[in-house]
Image (tube, rainbow, N blue to C red):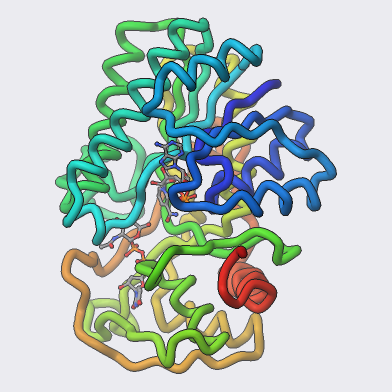
Length: 337
Ligand code: NAD
Ligand code: UD1
């Protein structure tokens, strides 16, 4: 199938493009490079021996986006494009709402205009807010989001659900990612944040290659076995494969579907550091600091629905993800240049 991949040069998008090619699909990438580099396209070509068609454009520029739909018969869209830095979103709410909502609305209008009826959207476990119990299931009520990034995801989910009710012949999947980490095993693709990383794994890998002196563990006094927060870390390649499997099901299944993409297993920050040492032989220097406002002690997914309906199960371990993330950072100490 011809798959339009928005944000296809970003962290999750680029890994998904590689899996799409290996599953026999033809990805067409749209990205405005606001948080990625053109070099990623060369890396994709190196890994797949295919250079996907690429359009450098902002999805909010609807007329230009229309030209992409005119130029290619598109079967489905995977919509990764969006701004994703939680802290930054608090200071720049308008940018986050305009970009994340605006790009989705313009994409939906172009899909309607061109009769493209299959869409996968990158949502986040953040939409659950504080869950009533664990593990988190898809039918849990949506919780309160605490920052414009998270709110934009919750709003887009709502928009897509209203849209699907009004357009019952559309097939839409909301994929709620837990914590994507790791990198392509080749070390060619990986997570390459601008500035100081907000997320745990890129911070760790930057510490071990000497770009930062130590990791600050945000609190070791939580009500968890070792006092540090627990998350559900999923290898980015497993996550990418989840999109390919969702695609297969999506095209046969009208309506809106929601899947958690995680592993179902909780891992604490200290356990991540242990896994890192096991997987790489490198000890991560760290200091324990205060809690980060907004962090919840435990979050992990129930992944039964994706397994039962898609046959999907993440198989890579946190240790493998640490090894791959380290390999990427070693090969690209200053990120993708
Ligand atoms: P990323 O920043 O690496 O990739 C997003 C890509 O979208 C970037 O290449 C960026 O240049 C592009 N982009 C942004 N706005 C655009 C626009 N208006 N037009 C065209 N391109 C645009 O992020 P990622 O980690 O790969 O995340 C992909 C998606 O998954 C995002 O929607 C993100 O919110 C969501 N998500 C990510 C995580 C995570 O931890 N990485 C967790 C949950 C959900
Ligand atoms: C964060 C966001 C969430 C977003 C997700 C994926 C917050 C409060 N939440 O989730 O909205 O969907 O990223 O992008 O920002 N940690 C440290 N030291 C660090 C960095 C992280 O100890 O330098 C700890 C955190 O306290 C947390 C764990 O590592 O317990 C994972 O953190 P992170 O990677 O930022 O993910 P989340 O907090 O789950």
